[in-house]
Image 1 (tube, one colour):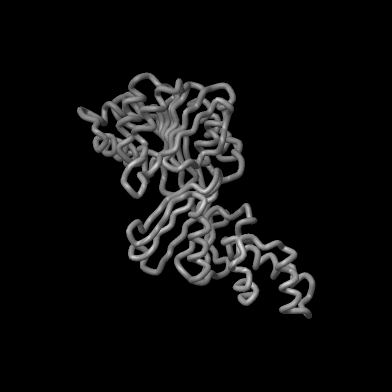
Image 2: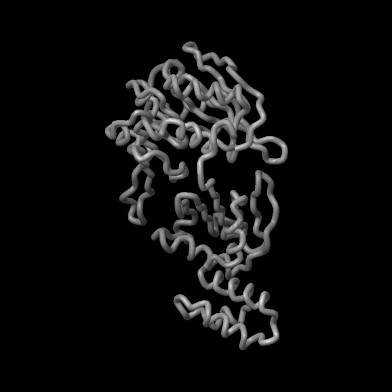
Length: 347
């Protein structure tokens, strides 16, 4: 295969028939099914996706992790396993293939990049000297559609979530990394997307397209000259000028927390967001610290308690099961009361 692959490397886009003829010439005794597989593999390599071609057709794969040359690690249904190997040359070709259409670059001067490849795929790449054994490539894939809310939580919890949305409560979904926060947020929004104006702000767009009235804003990093960047805080401010029925901040993790807090104060009811935190008290504390970093002053904790109505805790249990662990009411004095919890649900 390497010989055939190298033969076509100068060709921008060889035709499958040309590759098939080359395979027939190089291995005339190869069985037809094996020859077809070889043609597909060569074409995939030439396209740049290399050993990921077969993995990419598996809709159960939600994460692909490449830690330099060697095994490819994938996540299926919350569990990690290996799925083939990748060579050093293939890793470098894959980096070029993934970044080429985006106009972004990664090198020793800019050793990390985070890009959205399409509506379903987010890509993070790190190269040496930051990535000791790199390049490291992490691809996160999101579901093609939105799951029903009752498929993500038991009846009692789903009903409680429905009530929060219907009451236009300001809700924050929290939990550790990869616990299904975005999946749950999409399901919550889908219940109102067709009849309300949603303005969604994300650093990297992950939420799927919802109703026709939904506007999606995505942050942009500065270019190599340090200009052209658009921050999350700027997007939140812009979103308020776009007549949102609900403001949605995909993930709060920086100074935009202050802009979000100010938006909640001005009466934008029914807003939703997510945040990385391990427990509800930590979620409130982290929101406060991020808001302070963004310029919020005064008794920020009390301010948050006065405008935030509910917290939804997502967790991932044994075997990778993503679960709505609990729902908490946020009282005006900052205390928390568990409204529902401990249900079996998979995101």
